[in-house]
Image (tube, rainbow, N blue to C red; front, top):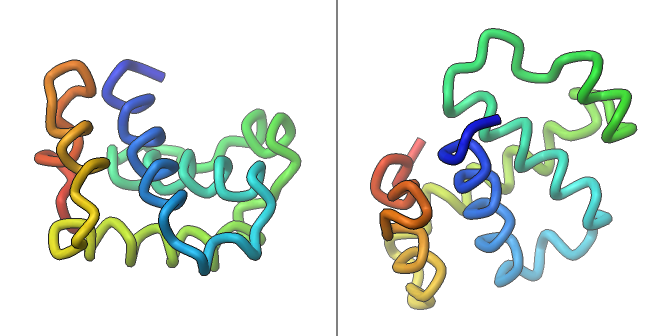
Length: 104
């Protein structure tokens, strides 16, 4: 997992903090879904390897609804009135992931 990958997962997680709909998921579930979505967005050959499923204790199928909600959050992040998270992740320190992955 490189710096861009970590930054993208963190960006998704921070976007999730301001969305009340994601409160229905356990924090570990949201974290696993953020990793799965970041793997998809970065074009990983295997998006949810068995080792990650074992470590996270979630199967890919159980994460799909949360991944869908994170994807909607990412798509709407530009139009969101709360721009603090987006500005933070536009910086080079965070590999400009808000610029590179503004919508999916």
